[in-house]
Image (cartoon, rainbow, N blue to C red; front, side, top):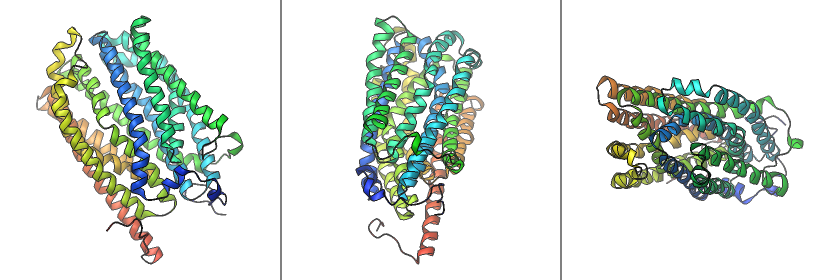
Amino acid sequence: MPANETGSAGPDPAFQETVTRGVSLLRGDPKTAIRKLSGPMIVAMLLTAIYNLADAVWVAGLGADALAGVGFITPLFMILMALSVGLGAGATSVVARRIGSRDKQGADNAAVHAIILSVPVSAVLLVILVLFLRPIIELMGAGSATDLAVEYGSIVFLGSIFFLVAQIAYAVLRAEGDTRRTMYVMALSSVLNIVLDPILIYWAGLGIAGAAWATVISIFAVVLVIGYWFFVRKDTYVTIALRTFSPDPQTFRAILGVGLPASIEMLLMSAVVIIINAILVHVAGADAVAVFTSGWRIVMFAIVPLNAISTSVVSVVGAAYGAREYDRIRVAHRYTITIGVVIALVTSLLTYLLAPLITTLFTYAPENASLVPMFILFFQTMCLFYPFTPLGMFSSSVFQGTGHGLTSLVISLFRNLVFIAVFSYLLAVVFGFAEMGVFMGIVAGNILGGLVGYLWARTFIARLIRTWEAETGGLVREEVAEP
């Protein structure tokens, strides 16, 4: 049997006998699938975001230098997460496409390929981010926060393998439509982290190192639980076992074809954060870095529902693409853009009204009181950021789900480097608007990047459907076609 576009052998005759509820959901109505898959992910990501906020709040009690130290580690941690989430996106795309084409054996094999890829990646990260951490932090201009940043980062990066394995496991579960279990383990990590933070930071007297150990311990617990599901309980649709592994260069290429561009996209975000930090240090000092990196946690919290929907889009679109049901891709894209913009508008209104209250989370320590005006300025400016985020985010998910990771990367290049970084520099440095210029540059770049991504995805989907209609004589699945 000829190999399909993901390198697998084709439909698996046993597919109908082994299908799970999650897989049935993926292959059903895309609107229903998006809603049901996104719900558990929203809960899980909200808990993760709450942990990130709680982590910053507890660290804030150690002073501005500690808060800035974590801030300088943030873009480096984003590199770790970029590679792990990127490989996860590649795994989700390939596994979902093979599930869509009813190839269970190919889905199993792809999952094992993704896990194998995580080993060399984590080894390289461990060497670079631990051995060369201090010179990197010094190069970033951390100043008095350098020692605290190195202390925090050295511990966190020791657990790099756990982050990679966990993200790939999340990806496999999402690919088979099982977002509920993903929610369980992400919730476990967040709750455990929130509980451990005050215990290790203050009660055990470990300071900023306590926050780092809480992070590593919580993600290790996740790996243990996921290992139990896959290797002991064995009740997932996808089977992860060496006996299912058949080395296939095309499968590696298919995963990396989405995973590497997705990783680079997140690395671009990390690079932009580093650039923005440098601009802020130049125009406003280290306090502005503390405000931006801490406030950005709120932004990440605010877009959690959008991120959750985005991960579901990759799975649903991947399954539809594997089944060659391109009209479902169009429905999923339009539906998620609509609900995403509504969610974003509500988020903007709440953020604007609650900006002073949110600011108190980071300024309760007396030494941070001077940061209040800058925090409020940041939060209220970001209200213009949210409404255009769904356009770019969900459009990128469409390209990732269909295996066109390079296109998603190009869109991200425009958004982050051509638009956000350049506008931030021009407004802050050239036109002299200081930190306000940086914040407005982020907003302007996001608006243009979102519009470019949306129009590109619309064109791509239309072309897919036209090609399919030409091949099938104009047949379209009526049950999902939009009126």
